[in-house]
Length: 470
Image (cartoon, helix red, strand yellow):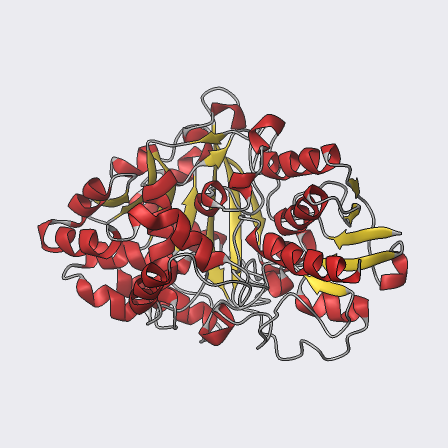
């Protein structure tokens, strides 16, 4: 009998398996798709030689992950590549604010009226960033914070809505960039804890950047898989699990799945009936015959580019998708251009580029023209560079990854108390009513992102149970 079976070979499932294998437990992973990866894959979606990331591409939380940083993933081929700028946010006047490794450079891009306010916001936390992030992303109620004073100070700034925090800034350049940071979790700007979301992304950039993985996000998943196999674990692909009886006998079952899928497979009835799924993404992967023709200079060397003319426009786009049930007229776009720093992702002289905007959960329309009109506002002539495109709205995203229910790439609405207390109100969010069944997907704390910490936290709960049975 195995000690643990993990269902789902996304970053959290693989991390959970690695953490258990490192501690001497026998582990097997079962994945429905033909390859591992979940939200961290790389595929030729458009044309041969153009390697795209179907979901995540830039990894500020990956390079900063307390779980990944304890693993020798570089031995297994993972190499982080840093663009000249982690992120840029262009404006219609041809200028741009930036999120740089340097706090001073970032502050200066906001203008003299807000430079000091930004420095006062982030500089106190940078010297204690690693401890703060570990406390912020740790298993709830499992241990006392390592630095409770810093965590409390962070909470005072980050627990209120981001709209409150943005009152520190007098001009919209800083507010727009910060609003874009919050929008990475597809959360309305006035939700609780959204200020903390923006601060985490900003601090992550200052600490270690927003890199891409050489060769694509698949490199992260492949490195985790190779490390797991060296630890004695096994991975089985093309293995769809419809009920617990489909799996070999084990002392524990750990699910990197949506909560509703777990309830169906494990026979947990209505255990997660109150769990809410959030707005979806509409994503386009592009093959380009040259770089994106941004009007502003900074986006040309940035790995990630946020596209939204103002904080008001960004807020309206998020409200439309999350609360009003409609696609926005001027969508806020998150874009990544990996080939700016990794030429291996496209044929010589060509580029890969992706962009996504937000739409209601399950929306079945086509946002392609709206997205490209938005891009043209900041990069005139963009459409002339397009060789091929691959579009994925909510139905396609859900078909590609079963965890993206209705196209929700965050595996659950990241708004209200559910941003903090997921998948349900519990001091033990990784456990279920079945004593041998656990959940480790991004539906659990600390939530979405390729960082493996949900898997790490769940594995900690599992190994405590397994050892108590010994």
